[in-house]
Length: 379
Image 1: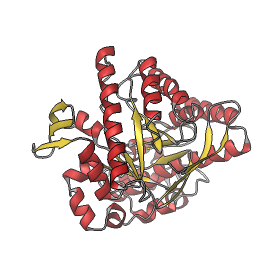
Image 2 (image 1 turned 120 degrees about the vertical axis):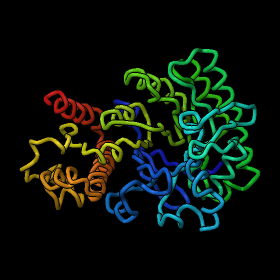
Image 3 (image 1 turned 30 degrees about the vertical axis):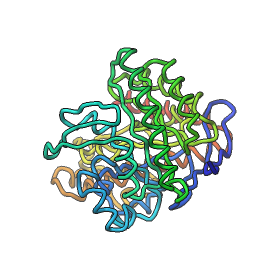
């Protein structure tokens, strides 16, 4: 399969990597954070906002978009990029996680998952064939294979079954992609490594998936309820066995310090709803830890959320004004705070790339985490 990922450098003191991923809709500089646009929109923001804060790639979700408005409708509208007015890369999750976390009365079958919609209870089915057709309809730059995400905690036998089923489905997704011309059209397909808390099963899953020679690979089944040390242990048990010449993506997390720790473990791509979700409740990120703008102490605070951070929110508005919007339940609060939080994450990744290029990532990321956690501890 033609190379589409350039590994520019690897940190000498950690496993951190500086890379470049080429897609149909542009180049993605890694490490990168991907804002989540589950239903064809990053909540509270327009595509113009996303461009302003430097978003290189965003997410859509197969499960949600196929339920509403349906992937067929999106295809009729010219694909997801045209439908939502976004001209940069889009990664779509396969929907498997949502089936396991949201859907009613799901039933595993050899060729997929039978379930009921969480919206109207309608009976539906997702397997490799359906997932690949939906993501083809959406026009995803990066599509994810369908997998089984085991719960936490999970016993060894149940996990082994999930790993085996996920590998079989990944192979079927790859065969469909080959036969349909998906790869030839410039789309990428990423595999997902499962294995729960069992290091040997994660290694087996990663090495088996590598034989499929997919364009990229993800660490799945983390941040599903386990404590942070266990989550980081799972990532660290997986990345060494993922192909070094392909992008590595950890799905669905995390906090700023977690991202920096996972970069040090060799992860290139991240997504998480956290920065946009907490913004709508008034929690915003700073280098000294998060702050809740609803607090009384910000009532007369004339400073921006972060001094010198170059986003529209910090350039133009005080903490006092933003607190006012929150307490008045104005919609603008969600927009301005989401814009800030996502820019904070994207700017952090830009700093990561700069320090990888400078060769001092190991010391810089530890100092950054120490400052952030000291701020948390002082509150």
